[in-house]
Image 1: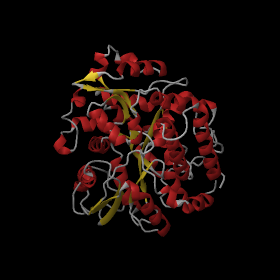
Image 2: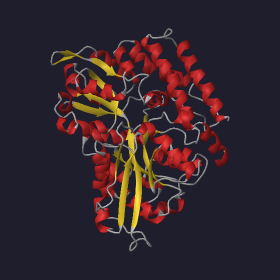
Image 3: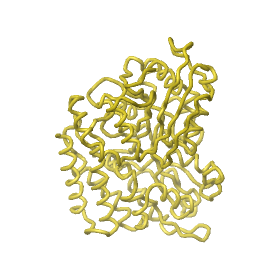
Length: 463
């Protein structure tokens, strides 16, 4: 698809795409002008080292105090570059898409722009961000990053690079170690594959700790912002995929994909998931796990940070779960293990008058120290593999880092936004069927929802 045609499709679908929430999204929305804060140990950009420059950055609520956390990471850079002032605005994930697309079409926006991984191809197709291909050697090149993450810095089928991976969202199993011990289970084998995983959940279901019975598995349903992210790892593990190799044909409704959906949803149908949780979102499922209501859930690195953070700072470090949890890879399906890889990239807005200065900030944020500092502040995994590997002395991080070796992302195509909107709708319908809200749970009823989703996604691809 040409960029011009991609732009037409995207512009016509801005409204439906605005409902997306990135995997690493949050709910806060604040603006902060921290222009005189000194920060940073980076290389000063040629031609800007002596010239005063004020940069603007739009970021998302990636951490509990997003503007302050960001500026704290930037402090060493700004200390060494007193000519640079930085204004940061925090956009809410729910309204960010509309604001970013408006900026892209008007040409008036920030200098530095955070984009969720699934948004980069769309904004690039709208000619809203700068081509960074000639600059990637400055940050060590493609080999420094996960393949699944790097793929989303481009438009599929094109060589141009438009974003630099900033942090990574990867998913793994979190489990109560004390529950496994009481059930006589070995964590080394309990989550090995689909068969052992189901056997483990059966043994954990109804187990009692501290006077409270646990449901085996906490699963968010249709009201979650991660609906496709929750289901696709099981499709991938079954051997299915989203689209075919050249992204022209839907494949998530074939028999292999159906096998993955039936296995995952079948865990709820068979009583290993509290049906009430199918009305909840990921945050509520994480709360259930923290409160001891469930023994296993799927989550990301931010939970490790939450468990290490006291309640007065917004964490759950006072909960029993914070001292009794482990992390394991999602169980291997017939095609092996899989997980979802998301996160965010740093881009330069096309309308900026300060490309060199903006790039110098991105180079700094791509350095090892800044990568590690921001990962600790945000609770996400750093994007650079070497920095990610430095966290593996912690068993929890080790499991998440290992999971990235077989992680997958969505097709890097400009149309992905409206495609995902369709998937949220029809995958949500699947959870209604599982919960008994509509229809009867069967292969036929689930297949119909996958087929209906496939028809709508096919129409989007063919526009």
